[in-house]
Image (cartoon, rainbow, N blue to C red; front, side, top):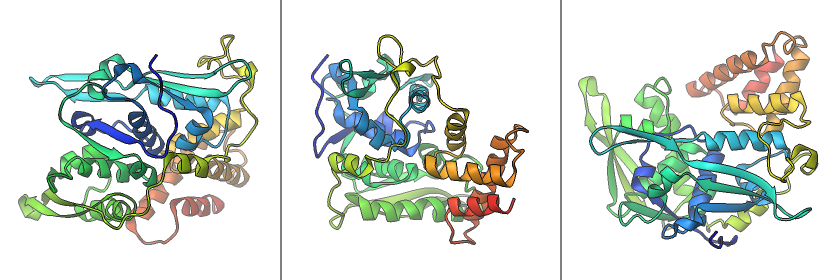
Length: 356
């Protein structure tokens, strides 16, 4: 295996245009950030660097994992290994394959440091290595500063065209690339208010580019069909955030004991089929957090869970806990989208559960 890059202050992300313009595959912000770090750690000229090794503390910080046990890593592994790349072929066909082929949690030596290995799938290799054209680059710190998946994807979509200074994008394509669901913000005014403007503000404040936009093409009844983005270099951005600083800021927040060797197979690697001795509550919190799009930390989900059980003690016995949270979460998001309150979604959801 080729020698891996060690952690350093600045990394350069090199991304193929086809990979940047693929249909969003439901990656969380943490997974998008991890993919950016992965791209910054490989050498696009050397396929042998496809296996990227993360020290466990670094991996936890990048993924914002708050608990260190096998159940959580299994959830992360299954999610990462399930990410699908969907592409249209030259003659109008369709091609789909997973982005990564392997996730491995192991120790370097007995009682040594824990690490995570992530390996690219064979079919993804042409999009990651040895391409001669149709790619762009950016410094990793831009991805570390941004806080939401829409922000990071919008940054990459526009960064690809920074040299030309503008990009014309249909609303349909933009929604697909950002992963905005069909029934989410169907009115342009809502899409502008909840997606475009927050992205514009975050990118201007935290990255090396700024942008403005304007309607470019309209359809029947003045419906906006395309937007023209004007992209400029940001001469007023904050000091770059290094990966080393990012890891330091996000380390030290892991809850619970170190990994229990009883939860690891005889080879010292993560055993995906075995759930170990993780409590049902911990597994429920992981599931609830995923159901709410990983919008909250595990501590926040734990707080909401405790409040729900206190307010409705028979809820879990009825098997309606996930349904209850799903209903209340959608209600809180709908109220947020109407813009009538100043509370965060978490505060609103906590208030709703308190009144149950």
